[in-house]
Length: 238
Length: 219
Image (cartoon, rainbow over the protein chains, first blue to last red):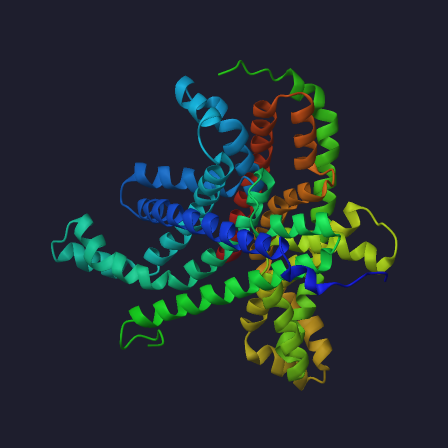
């Protein structure tokens, strides 16, 4: 194996700055997309457990649509196809005047994609509470809205924390796909360092190590949240 | 909004079909290799001496904490360096997907093995089987059957992920779509068509898995 090692390349300008910029963009894409994913995902997840048939139909359609198309293609659809299909002036504004369209579309695409997965976790979390709580709430004279607000959601929220942790990790990893529509996030920056220095192994190692560290940070934070909200007396470790 | 013109898509169908075949071959091979390797990792993790088991656990957790795109780039860079000559995008993608998916299949198989009752293993050992034989003839067949729906669901995800070979330019379905879409300057039609194809395949496959799961529960 013929390879000229040069680890110091990672710590000289401009490459060190490129890595930092890459981490920043990865966090900006993943963070903003996570907000969208939580908002849409919780809504759709709750819809899929409501008594109303229409609500469940809408939720199933959303999840089926966004889970059965590859994320890469979804990003292309947002970035290349959607602006063309939007009505006149709005489509024109997006194409001409929207600053950093690649950032906003990757956030929207990644957010809506992850929302479908979050919705499945939320649905499973609510269903795992069992019908008994729901019936008890109804017997006490709670409306459906009250049952959700005071009984089902507070319990489900704790149930879904562990699966949501892995979705949070997924969204960080999946944010690397934003490079395909031109966001220079961590993976994109490491590729750029590779292209301009031919130090591919060093560049990819740096990005890999940073991803692992981000993963560890998310795990630590989410464990802390889980401990904080666990109900005393349940099997969840307090 | 421009008028849509689907004739370009019709003309490109033979080329796209070739791409789709490449996708299928890549997924089938990666799935077979991934399940095989994943099962071995799971067994090692559960019954090998502690340092070896820790190594297997490290492999699984390590690969699961980096993005697939990163892994694809890694192997695209490393495989030719190690072998000493260019091997082409297909080989390096196949190695990347097999090793990457093995980590995920290993977790599924580990759950499957853990779900088999202890008595099965004890009985196999009691009638004189070695540990290897007990796994091969008693535990693994049951675990595989029990986990079949989840393994298949993971494979549908693998099929969707295979579109990522786009980043190293392997001519799978997604890359083929991108090539003709840009050549014909018909991005809307081609990307919508691709979405339809992926949706049809993945949706019907996941429905089939659901039916299988239902049959297993009622059988």
